[in-house]
Image (cartoon, rainbow, N blue to C red; front, side, top):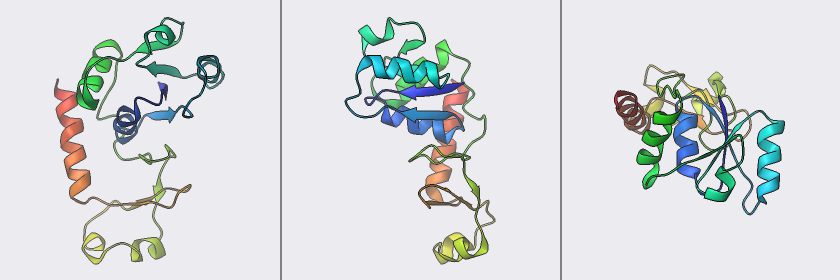
Length: 148
């Protein structure tokens, strides 16, 4: 499953990306027709909080308060596996991550370099990823969502 999240679902998109899903973000202020066309063109499920927009085929209304409740309600409607492929996509720009080269690992904090890895990098934005405390917290959150 591939997703297109409207601009009100930034945090849900990041959670989906952390779980390994391709979750693109809509351009801010994009008209409904453009969102629907992009979803069809890119074979994505359009996730939205807009009830009018959700009435169209291929769109799904996301309800709930906060990203955890949104994620829980979404998983009740779709077969979301929150442990699918964790930490394989950039949570910022959605690009698939690649293994970090030695020179990239050298740019990480010393405490991160001492960890066992994996060390990854986003090929688009250059953001570095390592198994630090943020990853541990996010992994626990994904595990919690998987258990619901």
